[in-house]
Image (cartoon, rainbow over all chains, first blue to last red; front, side, top):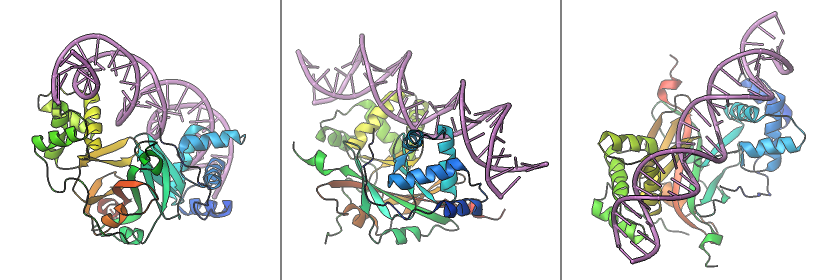
Length: 153
Length: 153
DNA sequence: TTATCTGCAAACGCTTTGCATCGGA
DNA sequence: TCCGATGCAAAGCGTTTGCAGATAA
């Protein structure tokens, strides 16, 4: 279904393996090879990736990380605040490094996902007041028709 | 720069069956009983509902609308701009009437979803500039810990 | 009449779970 | 050492698909 864009630019400030390990331990989680591998794969790919993409990338690199472990690793990385989830549709969960403030635009025709630089909307969103609650992250998903699908070929 | 346009689509509460039918036909879609039933169920429930919830509600009302038809109906209603999709997590797709401008706050512990009144962020989001593309809707999902899960027992 | 939609069943694919083994702290 | 994580298999579940009959326009 939804295809992820190639996305050439750096999606965010990738941390070193040491920094990732520290962040994991800080949350009471262990720094394991699959978790560091998954983080690295995300950093290298430079954009939003599905769990399956990541498993494939790791397998292509000669790794032996199992799908189950990719999910496990992603959950840990999300819990540690290192990785962010993007819900792009039913059965389409994408992951990307945190720290890159941008939105996602989904074409409802071809399913392409495009990164959109965030303006000044995100900080107010995070400060949004919900009595007694703590807001960790804000995710903005825009939907519509991309230039290609709008064009009368 | 872009002026703040009013939210496209029907602002305000539920439409009449006649209005829903008209909106469907305007998109070249047919006004069928399952589609009107699903819309009514959404309107009555007054909030975000899963496809399964809606099928259950209709079954409880003595209807004979099949799950497949609920999905079909929801797709048509979304295409007609009457209903909005909210991706709340893997395997959690929620639907609600369009026109109610609010965000959703998800507790990452208990999974509870809370409506958050939208401030002035949404119009700028819709006007966000993507070269050649047309943005139809903007969805904001906030994540964090709700008051109950944050409370120190 | 005709293209479209419904409904049933079955498949599909992402994600989760259970459990024995392995490994980080 | 000890609790947590990995990995394999298999199940779980929301969603989609194929097709014959029904229906809106």
